[in-house]
Amino acid sequence: MLLSVNIRKFRSCNSVELNDMHELLALIGRNGVGKTNILKAIEWAAGIESLPSGIGPDIGSPIRGDIVLRMTLGNQIFRYAVAVDFDMEKESEIQANAFPAFFLKEELTIESDDGGAEIMIFSLNRGDLKVGDGSIAAKIGSLSPGGSAILALYPDHKVAPLLREVIAFLSAIRYYPLEEIEDDGRANLFVSNNEFQTWVSTRSKTQGANKLILLKILDLKLNRPETFNELLALLGPDGLALISNILVRTFEIPAALEEESKKDQTRKYHFIEFAPTGTKEESVYPFSSLSFGTRRIIRLVTSVVYDDASVSLIEQPEDGIHHGLLHKLIPLLRSYANPKQFLVTSHSTAVFNRIEPSEIRLVDLADGQTTIRSLTATELSAAESFMENDGPLSEFVESVQEQ
Image (cartoon, rainbow, N blue to C red; front, side, top):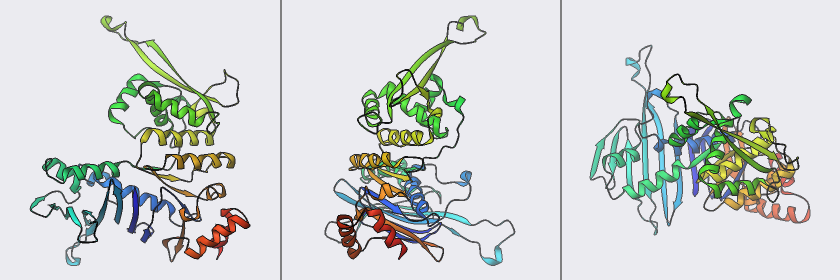
């Protein structure tokens, strides 16, 4: 799990330190103070090593940032530092169309048990890659990730198993804005088998939010029945009491083909329908016909059981969701913590009242820069006393924010 995050030069996060991270952590603050920027910074840093071909000019100007992630994997603590910066041409050489030369800096180390010198796994600066103790060096692209390069160039090096473990953890950090990029009901009535098989082989993320969730549910139904039943239990009467059943109906339709030899071929389609809890047995609806809040909950819970994320970065899970349901949602997330980790942003009193005072981080904006802090020891003691004698945690947090 992540132990700490240090963010510099990333959007509004000029100098932000997130320490003593728990399995469940809530970032609380008003709109526009930078809560999303903190999540996006973590996602950005974790995603660098999942780009084996490099950041490259094909995705436009790289995002500038300087971030350190400390994480515990097994019985070791790793420190991964990554930065993207640029060199401007000398003033006398700058032309009208001059563009800064971006470069990637990385360093991955293991902290020693006795507080001594860190053990170097690799370092990278402007394409100069050093492996282990530096006895192996190579020149790679200035925006090419060092870890992926080592696994490609030196797959049998002694640091390779450690690299694979770290990259697997970083690649499993997922950001969930829970937005609906598209809402085309017709596109979400069914999934063609060809579309499904193509997605299973590529796991492409280019689909709209609604279609992607149908692909995941279909994959669970066809290939992971135990996890599909787990999803049903979480959404069903004994869980969130939201969805009593998810029906997957498969149809084969003759293909309109001109070639005589292929006229017997068929096309297969899968229809995914949902039965809301409390409705008549025959009342089933396509995903796009469910309410916004219901779709949001299904998307979140499906992601929790399907994606197997190491760290889930969740934006405002309360949006569109009734307070009563939120009281069930937060304990559900907590039940999946360890080894999973959840970092959520929220404005909801229902969320505040389901977390511990030590799991709160207050986010604010000072002179245009994001700040973050935990409750002080005095505030933690006062919060516990307030909850015991006066009222819910949300009221205490509100009083602290007003000060």
